[in-house]
Image 1 (cartoon, helix red, strand yellow):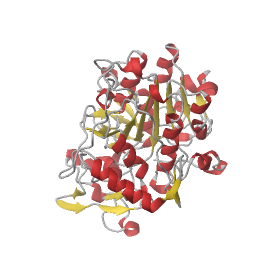
Image 2: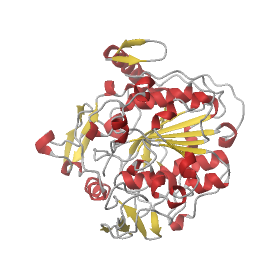
Image 3: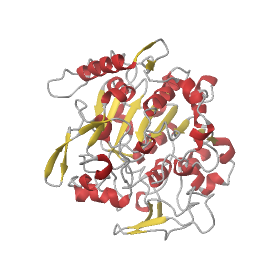
Image 4: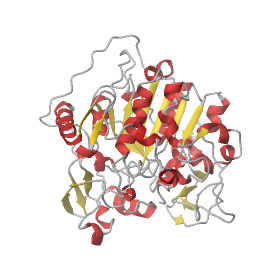
Length: 456
């Protein structure tokens, strides 16, 4: 197998180890590790005017990894190589992408969180299949070179928290809405009673709810075709800001196309215009001058980093998407945010701040790539999914989605601004290495695109 770049092909193992040695040597903040040399910057403006420089925001959403599962040991980051299992210290062990698929619903996150002690992950994972302490693991760094390369060259965020504890269904809703509240003291939680978990579910399908006492009531909520809260679709449409959501298929994409669960989009003109399938079109749209102002990108199952699919293609998929944007005319005005929808049940040491009865949830990795992103910067700012929405609102001069007392999080959230330096001239784009290139993803089979990414 070979690592692919636009310029050349080189043996994957050699390049992976060489890149990792260079990355670790150059990362900032680790004990005994020299700080990365700052990029030369030419001052062009004072302050941090997001809207002046950012005209396109791309949000790439992957699956089911905690921050430490991908970035344990990263110099300067809050990511030790050990964790707590009850009162015991456990050394994290290296795994490949052929690793355990660990439960990650609301109750699993409560057990791991343990009121902020972060010592309950020993209760998760099938020990008969995977041995002792399966959740205390990190993916071998040589398998995720594109992610570490982006961290080294751009910004690694080490305190990004989901809006809510639990899994993918609510994570994807809150990534486009900043809330999933049905009422001020009642929210969505976990997943509905029948696939595809949205406006196209069978009649009689119900959703699960969480009250402000943190009691989950399975399948007691409404049919999962929501009009109880606003989303970015309404806000962007009202301001005539273009947007697209790339999904594996137009109909029945499940959790990973949340607008199919939003009545305003599913039964409005946005459905045929702004929901783009298959997801691989993101690899060609930028080069054809068709990148929207705001873009969300979701993967196929095999390209998702989801442990259940036992595939190492996720880093190459993300690298291909970033390269497609970086090599287009849009690069100089774009901010790319890469994050994982939930923590997947893996151990993480960072206790999420509790801002309301939903969460914040278990920490996930986040990378920010832009010509204006700081170079080799580990951003310790406390962010949440609402921070991404707030940054979009700043870029396009949009009003908040709704008030905090009704569950919306974009007003309270800290914007992503600290990751950027708008006084520097936009850096030229350097293509990311990957194991396979875009042609692989452009020719994936219909079966790969149709397979559900997650069911939790």
